[in-house]
Image 1: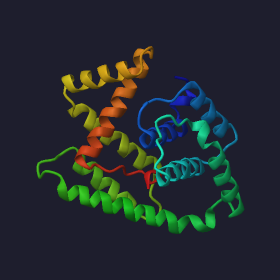
Image 2 (image 1 turned 90 degrees about the vertical axis):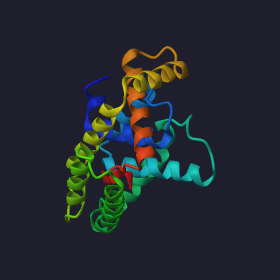
Image 3 (image 1 turned 180 degrees about the horizontal axis):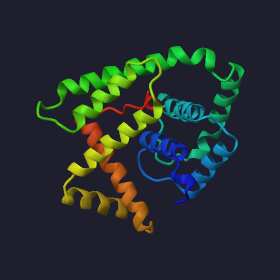
Image 4 (image 1 turned 45 degrees about the vertical axis):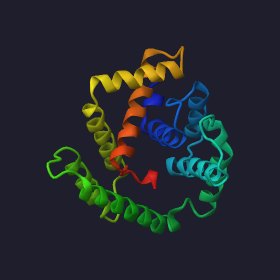
Amino acid sequence: MSDQAQSGYYQTIAREFLRRRGAPFFLSPRDLAVVHGWEKDRIPLQVVLEGIGRVFDGLRAHVRGTKGLSLASCEAQVRKALAQHTDRGAGRRRAAAPRARKAAKAREEIEACLKSLPADERNLRPLLRDAAGLLAGEAPDDEALEKIDEAVDGVLWSRASRAERERIERRTVREFPGRGAGEIAAAARTRLIKSAREEHKIPYVSLCYY
C-alpha cells in the first residue's frame, strides 16, 4: 500500500466505506484511484463521507445489496455533495447544528455502552469516557476521536483468541483467493473487529459515523 493510501484521508474513507459495504473488506486498486482523485481535487473529507452515506442510505431504502459496490459508484453523490457544500459557503454557516446533533447522538450511544460494560472493564471504559468528554466540548477534535476509535479496535483485536483469528483468516482466504497475505490479514482484522463491535454494541466515536 502506498504512503498516500496510509494517510488519514484514505484510512477514514476506507473505514467508513468498508463498514457500510461489508465484505470484501479491502479496497481494490480502482477504489484507491478514486480516492486519489478526490484527494487531488481537494474534496473535503466530510464531503466525501456525506456522498458515500447518501449512496448507502439510498440502497438501504430500496432494499438493495451493497457487497458488489465500489467507490466509483459513489462518485456522482460525492460530486453532488461537493456542489452543495460550495453553494452554502463551504458549509461553515450550517455545519454547527448538524455537527452538534452528531456529537449528541455519539455521546448517547457511548453513555449507553458505558452502562452496559462489565464493572471490571478497565480498557474500553477509559477510552469511551475520554471520547464522551471530547464530544461534550464545543468543537470535538476529529483526530483525537479517530485515535480513540483506533485504540478501541486495538483492544478488541487483542482480545480475540488465536483460534478465532485463524478461523476468520481462513474464511477470508476462501472467499477471496489469490489475495496477498497482507491484504488477507488486514481484511480478516477488519472483519473480526466489526463483528466484535456489533456483538458487544461498542459504538464508533468519530462523528463521520453519525
